[in-house]
Picture 1 (cartoon, helix red, strand yellow):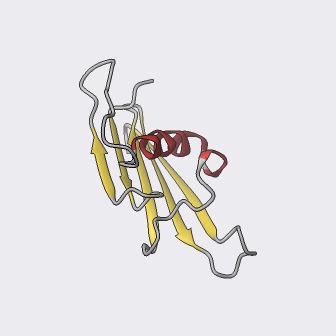
Picture 2: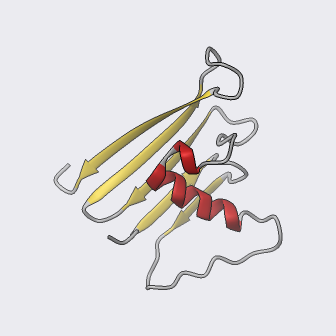
Length: 103
């Protein structure tokens, strides 16, 4: 399975990214602290969920974070929202939506 498109909004330090790989190798470059590792965490969090995410997944000042991946056969969306009623340290709720190619 190949990742055809990745979008992340308000995830960790990322405001918004969109990546559409055009080959087998996709260089992720930038200055120190530009978010390269966060892009990789976004991919892992999209696939594995909260266990792969940083302790605080929603970017500071944002209401929610969205991770979207198009894998061709499936489109996967994870939405992370604030949950102020949860115990301290667990104040983010994660939802998962998977849609197959037929919709």
